[in-house]
Length: 259
Image 1 (cartoon, rainbow, N blue to C red):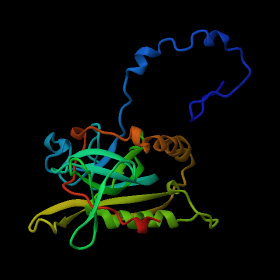
Image 2 (image 1 turned 30 degrees about the vertical axis):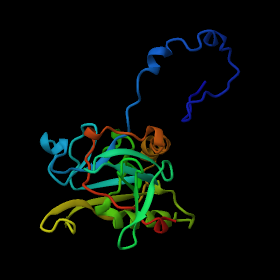
Image 3 (image 1 turned 90 degrees about the vertical axis):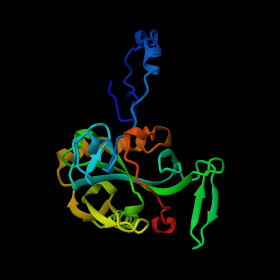
Image 4 (image 1 turned 135 degrees about the vertical axis):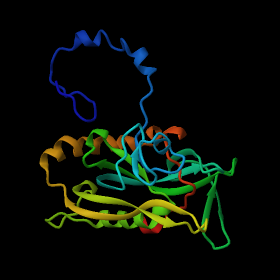
């Protein structure tokens, strides 16, 4: 009898009547235990917990859940990506995340003609963002983590998605997103909305070639690919505000560029 990635047992013809007699036993306590939320990759900000605790410096990669600082440059293997709607309150605090079209919004347009979405009851901002599932090279023990592309890295993330979508295998066939490794570099930028202030964001994405290590692929990449599909589900895609680094603003992603 073997267990597969979908948690279903292979039918072998064995007599399991002794287990059938115990169906449901011991599950009452297990059902009360909530599954842990996904880990998020983020860039440390002034008031983020890692900076205040001295675990990381301002403008460094950090994974929620207590990991050490990963520095300003990391190598990753993208596992998948999707567009999501993210609701934030007036202070920029995370409220909820869902599939595109997954909840009601009020659509309006600003004086420049750009679309703006808000919660029809609270008036909270709702933004369409790219959510990427990643495996961090050298920190594979963290498993798949989620990176939510924010306003400061909008163009870089759009370009990255385009490159992932266009990548091919040596045979010329289209490659899955996890076929190649990439380097993500944090850079500092001048704020357009707040003159005289600076902020850190994903500034450069560099392709590093194919994932050629078969052992790494079998032991880490493929299990992570299976798990990220579950992480991408809206029902599992939740994380408490205090465990996340909240960026001060978001902006809708250009949908047409992702088609």
